[in-house]
Image 1 (tube, rainbow, N blue to C red):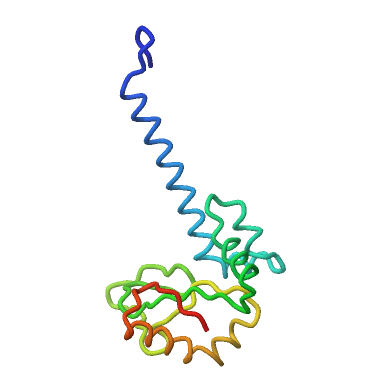
Image 2 (cartoon, helix red, strand yellow):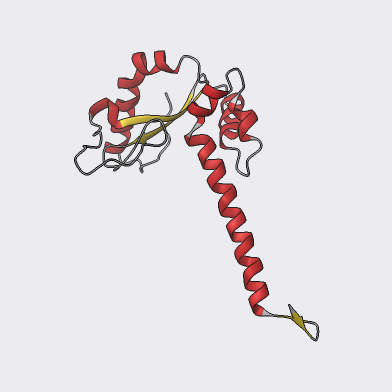
Length: 154
C-alpha cells in the first residue's frame, strides 16, 4: 500500500519476509533431495541424482558429482558421525516412536553413516570392504586435531 507515493513499512517488511521464506523453502528442498536421494533413486531408476539436484536452488548432488569429476575421484562419500545424534534414521526419516519403543542406537562402525555416496553403484561393496579403514582415518584425524567436518582423503 502506498500513501502519497510512499510505500508503507509493513508492505516492505512483508516483501522481505516473503523473500526470506522463499529462500528457506529452496534450501529445504535442496537439502531434502540430498537426504532422501536413496528413496528418489528407487522411484526413478536409471536417472542420475544430478538431474534431480540441478532443478534445486542449491544443487548439492550435482556439485558433488562435478567435484568428483574435476578431481578424478573414484568415489566421494559424505560421512556423518551419528553416535551422539538423537533420532537419526539412515533412510532419511523415521516415524516418531511411542514412549515404550527404543530408538536405535549406533555404536562402533555403524555410528558413522554414509549420507551420500557418488557413484551410488558399488557403495555396498565399498562399505563392506573399506568402511573400517574410512572410520579409522576419520578417528585418527580427530585425534590429530582436525576439526569435525574436516576433509579426509583416502
